[in-house]
Length: 166
Image 1 (cartoon, rainbow, N blue to C red):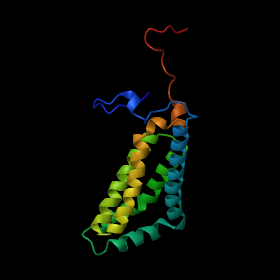
Image 2: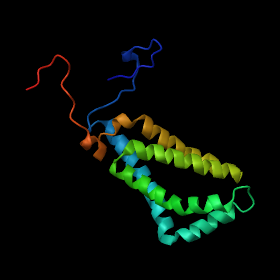
Image 3: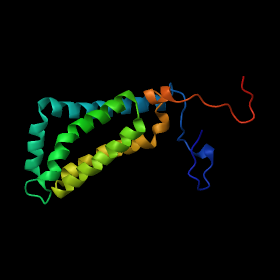
Image 4: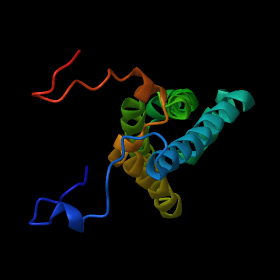
């Protein structure tokens, strides 16, 4: 099925197509991007947990000590962030609840970007946009998510209207 912009563009003019076959290059590319991104997020969170969330929390509190952000907001966020990153990463690796994981990850990046801008760390904020872009691409191209648990859990397609089912 070809996608159309709706602005007088004919289907044959659009090279971007969704694929329903898990063996397609688009589905394989999507799975590899989702897998790699999931590993990045999972390991980021797990290593923070492994080295101690209290140390991570203390480092984050130090980063915000000369900002208007109160420790009462920073502290619970810093303690929860590694667990949230790990959960989102694991869901992406598995391709389970992919849509929810991508939306949650995008919102996590919004919160991180807000804090980074409060700290006026513009270089890090620019780097965070790379994560935001990957979340965007994975969410926008989710129809290619054919190599996933989500795809296995989908109900079978119903017969076309007018077709006889046996």
